[in-house]
Length: 482
Image (tube, rainbow, N blue to C red; front, side, top):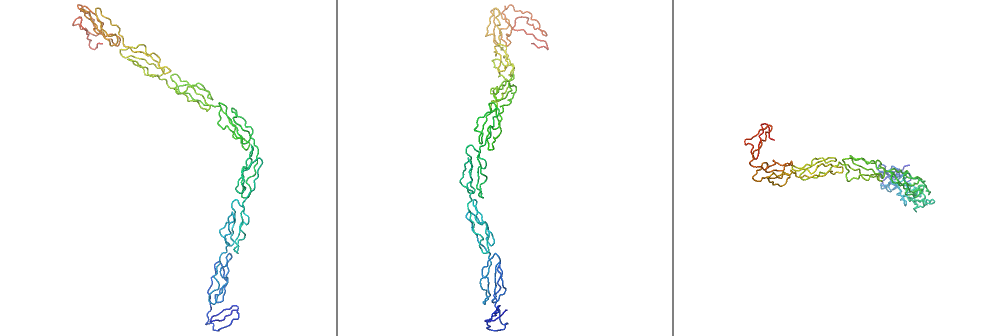
C-alpha cells in the first residue's frame, strides 16, 4: 500500500503505509514532492532503486573483483540530499606478496584472481607453494615459500683414486685422478646439478697397457718408459736413413699407440746434375757418397767451387756443382821492339811474335795456350838487325859506329888513291848495307867498262865511262825504273 501524508506543507510518501499523523490536509494540487535527484550507477557496480523522492532508498553493489567504497544504502532525506557517502567500486588487490629469501616473485598484477609465481636463485630449492592466487577477500591463497640451498652430498671416491673439491652445493665441481700408473676411466669431473644430483657417473681407476709397438726396420729405440697409459717411446733412424713422419708414439687411454710405426728411408740427395762443358763421375747419390766433376778439354773449373760433392745427412749436397768456364790465357808478354801476332787467346790457340822494322827475333816465337791457362814456349827477344862487317877497301880507311841497324860506316882512301863506290854506307832493316862496296884506285885509271843496257831501257853515256859519283839509266816510256 502506498500512502501519502502531509507535513509542514510537504508531501511525505510512506511505502509501508504506517499510520502517520496527518497534520494538515490540503488539496494535493497545492503540494510539492521533495526529490534528491538521480544517483549515478558507479563504474563496475550496480544500483537498485530508481525513485528519487523523499524517503526513497538506493542500494549499491559492485561487480565481481571489485569492492564497494562508500555507503551501500543511501536514502533521500527531507533536506533533499542523499544520506551516506558517494559509492565507488574499486578493484580488489592483494598487494605484492614479497620475495622469498634467495628467490624471486614473478608477476606484475596482484589483483583478484591474479597468480604470483615463486622461483629460487640458482643453487636453491623451493620449499612451499610454487604459486599463490589473490582471493576476493584481498588475501593470498598461500603463504610465502622459502628457498633452501641445494646440496648433492658427497659424490663418492673410487678405489686407487683421489678427489679434489670439498664443496657439494649447486655448481660445485669435484675432480678425480688416479694414483700411480692407473688410468681414470669415466668422468674426470662431476658437477652438482640443480636437481641435487651429481653429473655423470662415478669413475674408476684401472691399468691400461698398449703392448709392445715393435721397432721398425732401419731404426732403433732411444727412449721408452713403459707400455702402459701415458708411456712414450721415441725412435731414431739409423745413420744414412731418415723419416718424414713422427718418430715418437704415446700410449693412449684406449690402449693403443698414437700414430703409426715410423718408416726410415735411405737418404738420397738426388742427382746434382752435370755442369755444362763438364762430366760427372759417380752415380750413387745416397748418404755419404761422393761424386766428382771434371771439365772437358778447353775448360777449367772455377776456383770457388769444389770438384767433389758429398751427400749429407740432411739430404742435401755439401755444395753446388762446379762451373766449367772456357780456358782463356792472359795476353802474352810484350817484348821491346816487337809485337804479338794473333788475337785468339783460348785454349789450344797459338800466337807468334814479330819484330819491328830493323829488328829480328832471337829465336822462333810460337806460344800455345795450355789447359792450365798459361802459355807454353819461350819468350823471344828482338835484337837490332846485324849487317856484318862491310870490310875495308885496300889502301883505304873506315870509320864506323857498329854494324847494326841504322849504323853507318864511312870510307876514305890513302892519297893519292881515290875512292870509287859509296863513301858512306848504312846498315839497312834487311841486314844489308846500302850503296856499293867502295874501292881505292889509282886516279889515272878513270875509265869504267861499259855497264851494259837494261832491258827496255837505254844508256846515257854522254860523258863516257869516266869516274863520276853516279851513273843513271833512263827507262823507256811506259816502264818505271825499279
